[in-house]
Image (cartoon, rainbow, N blue to C red; front, top):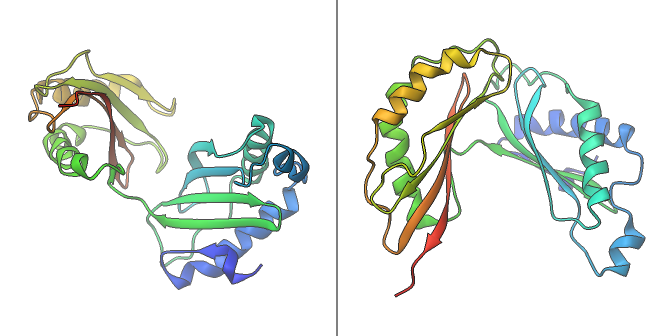
Length: 227
């Protein structure tokens, strides 16, 4: 597999990702990109499958984007899921990775990067989300993780005053009892109110995702008032 098809955070991962791409190619049906359909619709973006890849080769948080018709996205996702679990990481790497696979007509391409703790493209939200994570982190210490991929997601919405619009919602991946997360849930509820939302933002959706090895927070503005 050409090194041009592989983007990694450090060079020690390149052979591993080359093997991963070979596995994808071996399991590919050829229906992931459907070039004729793309050309008819003047669509040149490849179907993309993203996921979190753990040290033991297991994956969570699958997502698709970019392509029409949607059947191409679905087939690309099926191809990736059929390959899981992948091989274990090299012994020098323990942290999970955020991976995106691009199913291009010339062959698949992979982009792997370290997981960002603050997940937003909106720079005015980055500091705000960082402060939320600092405030709720003590509540997350009560969580128990049966496996490295056990996941707890705490979702909530804030008004412009940093107060909850609705109670915090907890979802887990089924590996752990939700009862285990109730203490953390109560702790996050007790952390409100947070700071005032950034200027002109009147409503914000926030998700705090906790794993054994890392925690992330993401958010997007639901309502903006223009002056």
